[in-house]
Length: 564
Ligand code: PEP
Ligand code: MG
Image (tube, rainbow, N blue to C red; front, top):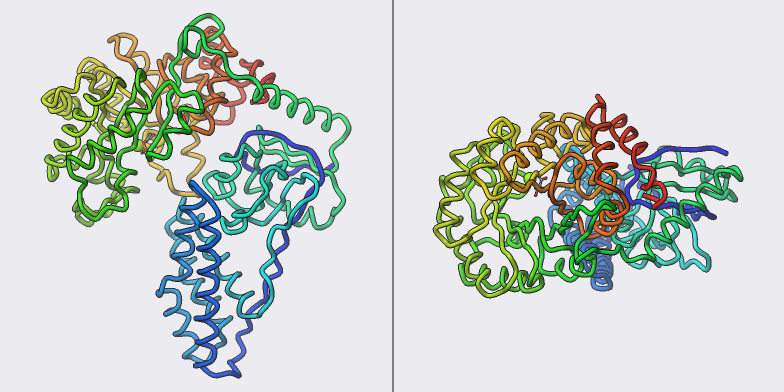
């Protein structure tokens, strides 16, 4: 029995045989071309076009997030910049294969240097390169085959194109040596409810040396065991049975609300950013929307959306939540979400620059148009519309935002707490606002001075970091004192155990990703507020993220019973 550890990327567990996706890709030689530049150039262009077409057709066979990712990758493959870079190598006498290898290296280096989400796109470029190399060599690209029995899929990494035709019902779990928690593997696994462990160093080599092994994957903790003992197999089977049982049960609501076992109602909302997200939020059993990221509706726009356009799209979203609450956030433009219709001066540190509410100085009309549209859309439906602004730092900003929103007849007005200084103003802020919502993604990065997209600094951005938990407690306490609801809409609320701790810390509502909402609801509904408070106290006492997590989990034995 050998156990490896990786990062849990999608909750669940599995035991069974594995399939190792080996990728035998022709290696490009640096020897000079025998064919000459013209023929090499023709080979290259034909291969790039063919790979681009293939990726495009894969995109057409898929939907949702995978479809969008594949469209973007097909665009990279057909981007003239890659071809031009490669042609420059061909002109120096190299082969088409060598040229594409070198050209893609340039793009990989640029992406890797950007860190975080962009760094994880390096694997997309490598996959394009591998497909082009196979095309030039005339060998087929090694695709994931059809399986006639369920397997655990092991790979160095999985690219979106690899998974376009994946028979997800035949996949017990996915384990990759590469990737991170925001990698494509994680996205695919989460959206299909498949257990996944990523960044599991050594798994490919071990799989190669033990081709007939049975594997046990426990993605609640990130362990991958080859040839598990009878005892461990039994434990994994027990977790699988618990997960099955949990998933087969609809989480019961009391009087239409998710309720702790001692009768405390906890609204659990969904985070959405596109019209297409609304049916999934409704199906997942959301109590409404706790964060509508409006900037995601307009990321591809070159011109500002008009009042009419905005009113129509908000009304379309709101009507799916008639009788429920929708918390809509004004544009959080800037930093990781630049928008073409807002002029941003070149800033050395965009995350510390003009983003979110701070754009008001140059773009007050944009904010006003958006608030007018929200107010108009609110009138067209029976959803309860709350509006909030991102990146508010000072009480004076909060007061101005509340007053502008009131001008448009919006009654429930709040702010996001994601800047540490706001915590030191929290008493005033919770008096000025009708509600506040904690953005743990940004609050975590600003508290720790660690870019949320930086892979090397990822540990600082672990939402279990005690500094973040203690900050949340201070905000929750101020909310209780001033009778101001305090929600959490950052990723912290999407982790069932951490969401439980948040409620135990005094948070009054949660807003989480649609795919994890039912897990969060199951966790909250299975425990008493008293237990959640005990877990929160244990986590708050810890001095590092791991200890906080372990201490909280030990105080919540029911989570283990649910396989969470
Ligand atoms: C956050 O910062 O936690 C948040 C919810 O906002 P975003 O992730 O959109 O910045
Ligand atoms: Mg934020």
